[in-house]
Length: 199
Image (spheres, rainbow, N blue to C red):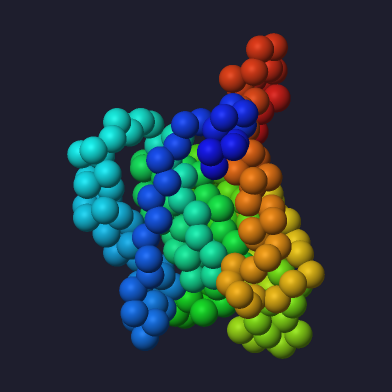
């Protein structure tokens, strides 16, 4: 982040890194499709940061990132609270283990498009990659397909690795490119942009 900020490839950013809770409770905290984690961030964590640092208030300046369960948690936070978070990085998201299954492939087409920019990374040998159910790789592909069909500003990057150590070496190697892509200038903000041609 320091190098990207120094080269003006991303804005000056304060990173807030939250350790996950106890392993036995991680699924309840991260894999649930509800706003509990968003409320935790917005009421317990970020007010303490905002008390010490000057933070931009515009939701387009707020991003959230995670790997594995943190990856789908990041998307859920932004999906439910786009008034606060609009940029998402999800590395090897564990959408397959969300209670009741991955809701996004069916939810995205039925929901008005949200102002989100989403970077997804998936591994071709992620958990259960060759199984018909609970397949972490295919659930990421289905999510990407739904985003594409709905016209979202998103990017999917595939790697040949597996899930361990989560989010894996591939995610670590592409993190700078993911952040560059996430913070690239909006087309509409570029001089001479044809606003009528924008989605």
